[in-house]
Image (cartoon, rainbow, N blue to C red; front, side):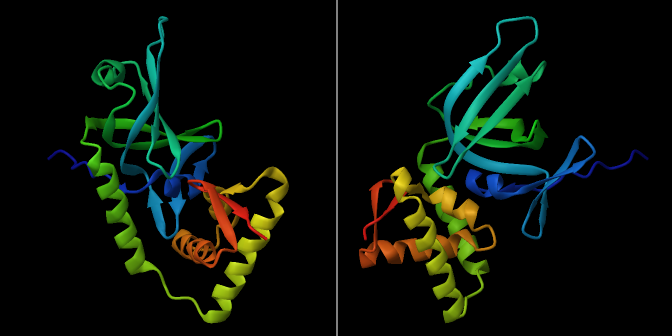
Length: 207
């Protein structure tokens, strides 16, 4: 009897979450992405193709850039895969199921499925993931919330010399804090008029 092949779970994530994960290597070989208590090998992501590069030499490959509003990640197709995904073009919203790889300190996706989707599914996926996260977030004590708020303010104040800071950078700097908690505190600071958003995703100290 043939051995049954067990396929790894394709976890639904936003790109920003994937970029926060820690690549675990076995020597030079990528094993999995450590994200919280999960060991991620396959992902299920919806995003927009913002860039496409196709080789014109003997070595066939296509590189796509995928963006879902939380970050960007490369999709890399080589050899026989090229023909399967040749029709995917810049500007399309796509569902991608694929295996994570890491080479030269860059995590990217080797696609198994790339399927065009209506753009509305990008927002639906965002809401779906946020709903799941909100159920999993453990409430913080008042003292912990104040400490997180102070850390966020220190980071924002320190970035004024550079004309502000991206929200994604704050999340990266405070890896020990849930992105949901950070987003919640930033929202409160905006409502209180302590900080402002000169453009979506960028934060500045109002003083």
